[in-house]
Length: 468
Image (cartoon, rainbow, N blue to C red; front, side):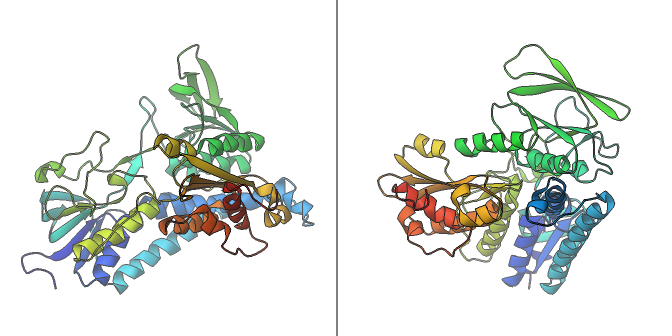
């Protein structure tokens, strides 16, 4: 039972991957728990308009492209595809409905109270949720993040001309020309969906390479593959303006280093330059909680803020803005509140780009490892030499293992492969146990699987892969 002076032991603000997991875990540990969420459905950005619906569209568009470009014909399956975009969007909505409904079921099963409305702090133990006063001994801020706006560019998802990631999922027709502003994960994923369905896609990126934060060799290879697939990449280029006239947009571009500008026309512009923490309207000033320079809430190792009884997890605190990072923090914060020991190893958080092929990484890039003072040994293995990738006609990509030259401990693993997102789990688990490249190399892998490429890349660290 809750402390008599409070309505709840734990109130979680936000029901995204971090918040709903924190609430369920807290309830499992015997704490009287509530979760404040203003959306009509649970699951936050990830389940409603992010990770889940985008994967539904990525998967469906992969089937369409395989049928349209002759990939299926090579396998002896001859079809002439016809795009039914309404049905494709319907299966996306169905996936979202099932999964968000599943969380509502889990709340009921675990006796988590859903308090509907926007939450605002009155003091460190009191929150106003849509006019209702709720008190709790512990309050967890898990409000996530939202799209970073591009100054001077107005997003209007309802018109479908200048859209953010939410609007890009809901287009009613395939745009003839689409311009994606930002060469990060979200822009490349959604850009690839519409390219497969027939759009001419141009990606405009301020930096000189795509996918900031990923390993240098992976970034270069990714750019080659996206170009080969038909994406027009405008790197080292900034967007200085977007004007809309009717159903057309005109972008003004210029080199990032300055220089002559040019214009580009599009039927749809996707603004995808990153995300920023959701802290506005939370009333943090009422509890004396200040943000850092990046607009984030700082916490200690246990996810406590400097205000006693107030905790924070997920996209509102420093670290990668990833659903699985937030989930792990949600479990950890609930365990810490319950007096247990909840820990997240932030050095081993995998990241995945769900394009085709997928791109995944965990740990340090080769560049980061060297900057950190490591002498490194690198092993690489091409997917072209992997028998399962060969038989599946998936030759693109490679696996790269970055190890410490002295201790052989694995510092990072980077993968481009059709199933890189699944393969990276093995690398993350190995690194969690402090594996050396030799540990991975001498672990028996089933044949024929894509994962054998990781074994061979680990063998390559010592210069002894078998199949190249």
